Amino acid sequence: MSRLSLIGLYALFAVLATLLNLGIQRLVLAIEQSNIGFAIAIVAGTGAGLVLKYLLDKRWIFRDPTKGARENGRKFSRYTVMGLVTTGIFWATETAFWLVWQTDGMRELGAVLGLMLGYAVKYRLDRRFVFTDAAPARAV
Image 1 (tube, rainbow, N blue to C red):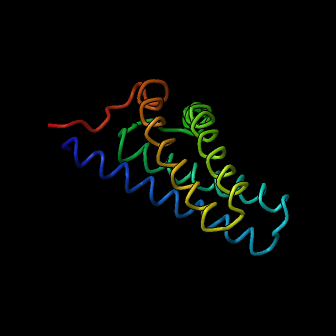
Image 2: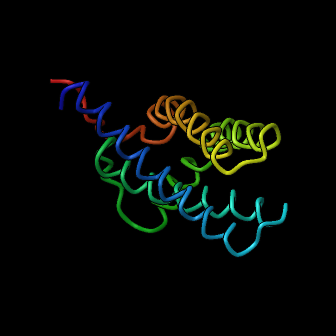
C-alpha cells in the first residue's frame, strides 16, 4: 500500500469514527440538554468512536494478526491508554469551543479540529506502543 493510500485510509477511518462520535453526541443531547447531558454525550460518543476506530485500525492500518479475547483485550487496553492523551486534546478543544460560543455548530467544529490533531498524534503512538507485533501497511 502506498503512503498516500495509507494516509487516505487512516483519514477515512478517522472521519467514520468522528461521524459516529458526533452522531452519538447528538442523540444524547436530543434527550438531555443539561451540562450532565453534555458530559454523557462526550463520553458516549468518544467510547463508540474508540471501538470503531480500534477495529478498523487493527485490521486495515496495522494488519494486526492478534487473535483471542485475552490478547485483544490487552491490545485494546493499550490502544485506549494511548487514546487518553489524544482524547484530552479532543475534549479540551471541543469544550473550549462550547464554552466560548455555546452553539452546537461551534462545539462540533471544536470537536472536529480536536479529533484531527488527536488522530495524527494517535497514529504515531499506536504504531510505537500498541501494534508492535503487527505488520503495518507500508509504502511499496
